[in-house]
Image (cartoon, rainbow, N blue to C red; front, side, top):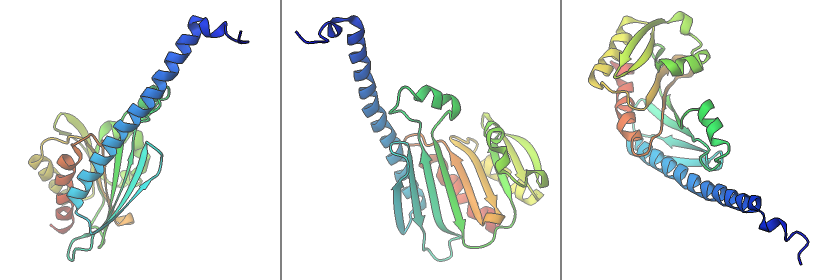
Length: 221
């Protein structure tokens, strides 16, 4: 007779085995789902940017990836696009509920490195996201702010000149739904443009392309 044979006949033992199996199944299922989101998002990113060279790096196991996309096209104002995607820990069912409360959703951060100086700073940011990351807009106190409605969502528009404000409003009129876009910015001090969006499967290109195509017009027009 085994020393601990009596333990494996107890209901709690079978519950422990079932729970362990469920966590293991959840790990592989969540990992596969995150990989599908990552591959879909970066495939859409390549379709929109059409880089001449690209590098992809895993930065967080199943929840973090980074891309460097280089553009060599002459006359195009963007020289490089950096993208970082951070995903909810779907492979960890114990931590996932906490992560959803804190982070709420997957995130795709895109940085556009410009070849030439930018005319002025501007931000179009969803108001809940603005409340979460407001300290990142370091010059907010020097910019005009207007509350606007884009689609069925409330946004804050920070701008320096009326001309820039009119360009933003023209974009919104042409594209009446923000979709998964939560923040668009031009920051002259960093010579960069920024886009933050939620990377839902098969939706990144749909909402990123209009913004990516319009940013050069904000600079040149």
